Length: 96
Picture (cartoon, rainbow, N blue to C red):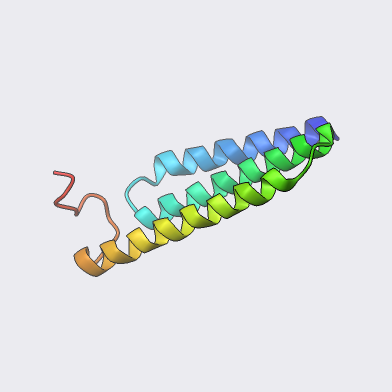
């Protein structure tokens, strides 16, 4: 059961990285793929903590930091859409 759970974690992580590398034009799709990567890391940490029988308080800290990361990314997305009109990276004048 442990190898099956770990292989699911590796598959989720690699799919998230693949989507992050392919969809690099839209900020929203990049944020969604980053959240998917964070969820896969949470699943991997959960599996390791359950197997090793450690305390699960670190998972609460990890989830609180991931929520802060998600809200910061969404606030940047909203401010960028308000100032530029879209979330394409190619349309930004800052990057050129």
